Amino acid sequence: MKVCIIGTGYVGLVSGTCFAELGNNVICVDNNHKKIDKLNSCIVPIYEPGLEELILRNSKQNRLKFSTDIKSSIKNSDIIFICVGTPINKKTNSADLKYVLSVANSIKQNLNKYKIIVTKSTVPITTGDKIEKILYTKKNKKKFEVVSNPEFLREGEAIRDFLYPDRVVIGTSSKKANSIMKSLYLPIIKKTNRYFHTSRRAAELIKYTSNAFLATKITYINEIANLCEKLNIDVKEVAIGMGLDERIGDRFLRAGPGYGGSCFPKDTRALVSTAKNFKSDLSVVKSVIKSNDNRCKHLISRILRLMNNKIKNKNITFLGVTFKAGTDDMRESPSLNIIPALLKKGAKINYYDPSGIKSNFKKFRNVKFYSNINLACKNSDLLIIHTEWNEFRQLNFKKLVKNKNFKIYDMRNLYSPSKMKKNKINYFGVGR
Image (tube, rainbow, N blue to C red; front, side):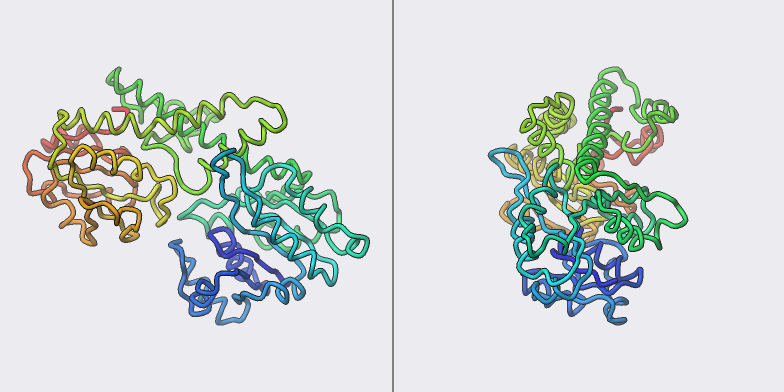
């Protein structure tokens, strides 16, 4: 099939590349000329395992192309995916649809035959209705269908999630559009039977409610971790005991620094905003947002207690600063709040992250990036394991750190407290 992807951000680039990998002819369009020039040179703007190889292979096979010409890309395609950003409006906490609606207007001007217009961007309920209203004219009446097809891609696991999905959700009342979309996804759903057809509004809501529920699980176990710290109970044991109940499950029951990234913070706020517009109160989701916003305050307080409130001129090393492993994404990362707070107390911050240096910290004088983990840890008074990268799971801390009195604050609970105690290392975890 001839597929057009409008927007080459995370969702658009991964989706377009994977559709090409499935044998479709895909053109990815963006108005950012520099980005498109780089992609045409196979320079990938995001860190996502396996993506560069797929782009290179499908570009060589001429199944995947990149362009800034939105007009011809729309006209030459059968299915058009809207994958542009939907940032949060800071005043209202609602999703800003200016980019989505701008794309809809561009599509309207270039409809030359029947096309399926698919929203893959995370959008509020009734966005499909708005797009349909923009596209509708007597001339265009039979030339389009608007479909909702939310994405469920985890950063760091996006290729696998696309090619081996838990489910593919398609929201449309059109039998024709549903049949075409099912054919498009057939290579990845024929063995799993996880294609779910529903109404457009339901598909839009499924995305938001899924993310809000996962955010709730993370926030819940973090609050239980706070209680465990006061009761001298290991939250990992509590989480395992809970997770053995199949009604609950163990996924997302890992205590840590709180959720971040491009989805959960934005989507929970947007869901509450949408509910407010329809005069419905989502008190549980509101509490989740508030609790996660306060998470960093708790972690900072614990760091101060671990250091006996003696932070000034102490060398604190962060192992990982991204919001999760497997990505270079810094959006809503807890480190963006924790590091500045420690700097205000006079700490000196070193950090090592496998995905490289971060521009977020360049404005701070006492923050230093190391490309070598040994140099980053060498003179540390406190090591903070902030991100669960695999290379942090088997470290010999006594060889890494020359300071004999160093401490470890493991925000991901990667290590065994009993083994650390046996090795005479001052170790502290979350909810332990």
